[in-house]
Length: 194
Image 1 (cartoon, one colour):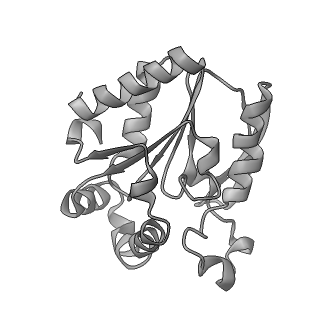
Image 2: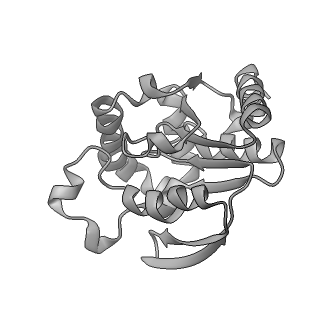
Image 3: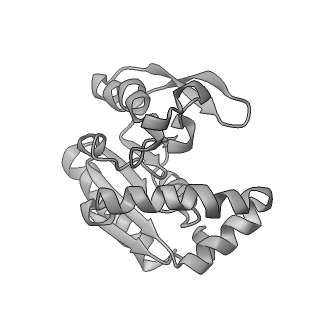
């Protein structure tokens, strides 16, 4: 693993030792490797809980012009906060609803607080959510690398990423200074961590 990952893992280990638990938020642009980084972190700390911001995008009925005009408004951050982040505080098992964008279906998922909770995905460090994290991480990669990854991973959606999703993310990152709000910024992790 690159030095950036090892440094992050060391910080997480220190938080777990000091506080007994940690809630880590990993934000950054699409194609930067957030899901892979979160997965590797969960592997390093077995028994971790991993939540994906993609499971909290707005349902079709929620996609109003007003909501989509907000920076970061295309994520149902209220549901992420209420169904997951607030529930973690209770220390008890809970159920949340995962949204599948392709099928438009919400599915109930059982979850429980663990020593390490990782929330990964664009918009997870929205100002309304930052207070829930004990560690905020911003992961970036060069634009060309990100576009190559997107084209390889989602060739049928690459044009939509360029015309719609990347501009929405860029607007959110700028409006809320997301990179500056992070405790740790990781840049350009290699393909092996994608």
